[in-house]
Length: 64
Image 1 (cartoon, rainbow, N blue to C red):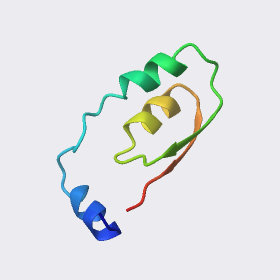
Image 2 (image 1 turned 90 degrees about the vertical axis):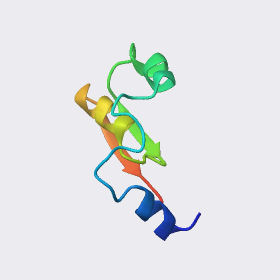
Image 3 (image 1 turned 180 degrees about the vertical axis):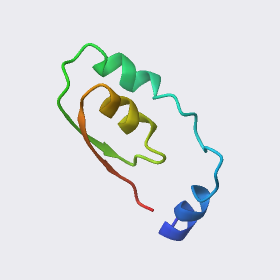
């Protein structure tokens, strides 16, 4: 898929994914002290938002 395809996929107001963070991300980092995170392929940013709310410094990058 090219950039315009991804832009179109996430252009609507409805979430493509849930607003909840990925359960595997939660399981891996929930007990760690806040630090820095790089969220590659962040999509709608659900994991980045969850991390930032817990004091992490997050850089989110998506193709679109």
